[in-house]
Length: 177
Image (cartoon, rainbow, N blue to C red):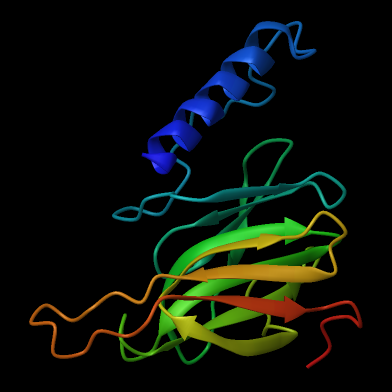
């Protein structure tokens, strides 16, 4: 029951914000009519970095980099030695990319860090191990810490069922490798 009450509480807060929480008018700021991802890929997570004028979008095997002003594809980032890309976030000039391990969901995943202005195709500035199947990445409001939700998905036959976890990555000293 506490979960249901919590969920209803969140719904009430969201409704209150929408009705009178200072939002006078909501309208799309950007709209792109062209296809945003490579053929056969899908965009799941989008992170926008206004200072660099870039949009970062997960496509499964990479993170596409697009220009905000016209949606032009500039290139992509990949995570060496990792599997599929699950999440991307931007904070204080840093792009964090969560990727599953090279051996799949039951392998230790990674978080790769890039500068928001790095050339497409460049190597990450740093790569750190996360937990099993990092599925979501975000920055704390001060930009000094990266939080990663590691799903810990079991194999189809449940012979390998890694623990879910949360990774807390301190980047207060920068992201140098």
